[in-house]
Length: 267
Length: 332
Image (tube, each protein chain N blue to C red):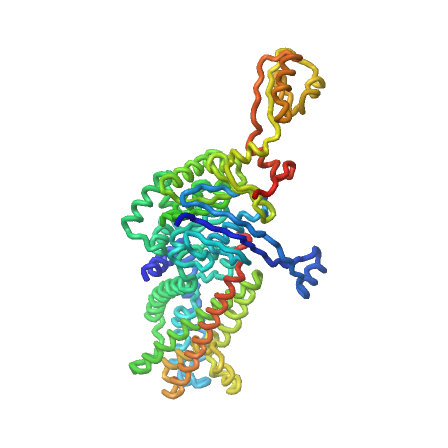
């Protein structure tokens, strides 16, 4: 365990290595929040407006909630598994008594902690200036469900990302393209990061709910907002649990056959 | 354990996709890739005792690095038996991994953006080295390699030579019993090379570690290894004492003469192959058997001020072995 704590620490130090880069990253985050805030404020100028079942308070909570959740779930840290496989840097890890998947999971957690820490501070400051009306969930059961959904989402997204990166074992040049497709296209659009999924037609929603994507951001946030019945919540948790298991098993299988394929050529 | 490494009839084949040149080649290899089997190792066998320092030599693509990769568990052997420190390398047992290290001259494990000490601390945790042992080995390595002042500098600000020495510290911090070195002096200047060699020699002596190294640098081989394994096209051509290799394949001797008067080069050529003339010195290459007779003739017919008979340089012999000028019969 101490092993992985050390990895956690060194990852943390790494993030701060480029100060300007780090500051820019945070500035970008703040600007993004402001942009989305003013966009939705403009849409809901009249306090009585209600669109797709969202009033001003709930849409703003949704937007801010997505920001926090993104920091938690979608921040992949510096997952460069595809690059390490393609360049042959994976060899360094294979020579050491260390589990490569756990190694990257630890680095991911480290980056999430950092991101979440800063995101919280930034949002608190913005909250102080903008004074939006927020919806605060107080039901402890609901919060517990929310927390479980987030943990499932974190593991699910990690497995998905690693799995996509492992494609590089078979297609050394394909890592970047597949990562872009899965992460940017599918995750961003189908997880609720860009718009709430329930504004889509019912048939499309039904299809989406059998896929893992909505369970990454949209579903946990719906629980927080108290929009789901207990039955729907439990059903959703079951589906994301199932997807998590499938993704973990697939990731492990790919790893096992991938390292056989990995021939360390060109290292 | 009486053997650190046992390799018996090891075979390693690679599948590679052939690609013809040009755009049509790209398309045809995309549609129906043609696979070709490259036989990197063809039934090689050898064994190494604990504490030995052995050099693997051979031209590019001979199979040296492949062998090191199989032995350190990075490659699955196609067939044959390999055992290192009593383990099957490719099972990558954590106990095995804690006892070995592979250093490749062209790759680095140090974190680029951080000072080297951070990577060392990380390795301490990964290899589960107790605090006290860690401090001792760190001190020892830092002193041997003279890198104390470099530990807290960002790795990307260091020179190649400095970085290589720190790479070595990172690779040895867990005191491996088995050390694989692939081209440890590549890209280093002459001073840094000598320093690296001294260190490898010392490490082998002090720690009793078994070391298997590959190098294209003949100085590495001559200065470090008593035993050499010559490998070419996936087969072992020679395995034994370096001096034996030299005496077996040194078919010629070198005569250096200092002439007191300028004389006819054509006359000199009758005695042996003139390799270099730079008056007053002349260098001749003659067959081993007739070296004495040639020297006598020189003294008799030419105004000789001084004359020496020398062995061919080792690197010259090895170069000839590689280029096929000297045929090496397979041993045993």
